[in-house]
Image 1 (tube, rainbow, N blue to C red):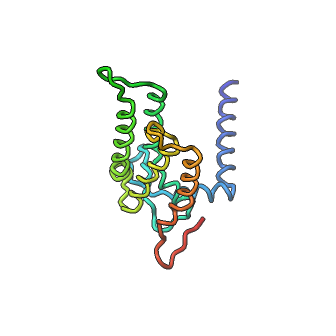
Image 2 (image 1 turned 120 degrees about the vertical axis):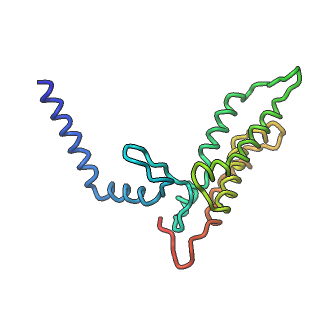
Image 3 (image 1 turned 180 degrees about the vertical axis):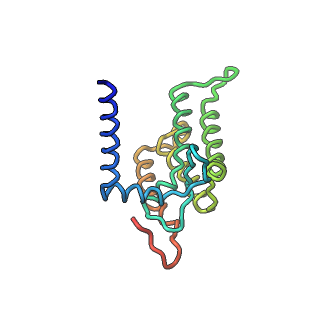
Length: 182
């Protein structure tokens, strides 16, 4: 009895998957996603292929913006910042909190273009520069070491992030004669 129920459940789950894939809107999203991202390598059978962060020649503004945010680096910064937030770090009796904050910031700043070039095969100089500057904008928005020295203003940080979000995709141009699709 259980065995029969199990096979019916498998059939139903397979039927739902087929129904979902046959919907016009779902198929177009899946096709768009598969065309949207290039792969870094062709993985062998059973191995997942890695997705590239480099911008293809034709790219819509929203997609450009998403590729210009160094999410892994920002996540690493937030994790390290969360560990030390509100803590006084002393070394040999001296307060080194600011030093540690700025060191983490600069190490991740230098790591951003290296990480994108090595891990995600990003080759475009403009994209590397803009993504690195995006890291600075995001850290400023979060406060970070800028807050430790009194340079952080939350209202200004919010405005900078909004303006950066609107302006940065304008620096990545589509080739002449081609338009980006939304």
